[in-house]
Length: 145
Image 1 (cartoon, rainbow, N blue to C red):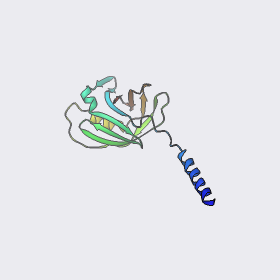
Image 2: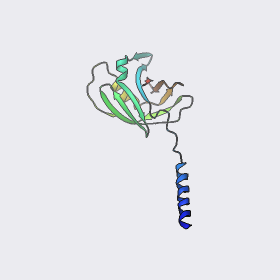
Image 3: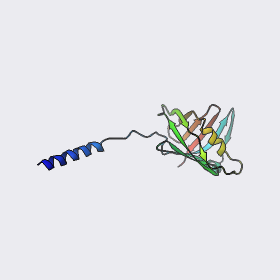
Image 4: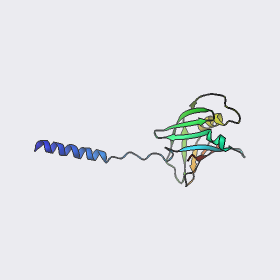
């Protein structure tokens, strides 16, 4: 009987361990976005669909972001608070990326330097648009489907 009691206790311990849940991931984790517009002091640059596909962000679990910076690729880290009413604070670490000269027009270098200055993000209720804001710029992204 004693081995049966040990077996039952082991099964109970394993069952309790299986009930432990991990904290929810951030709503941005697992999403991918393409840049559609850049707003600066009263002027807006709208990217063509071809340029949009060449300027993307992919937020990964664990605080990593993968970047397509026109003809270059990059990586960085990110942290953000849980959004309230679709808005929250966000920070990005330094962007490490390739440095090829991309044909004009290119917004890859602007995006890489702007991310490091990002302070705030906003998402729409339907999750189809993301806006990243710095003190001087506003980057608008559309969800990649």
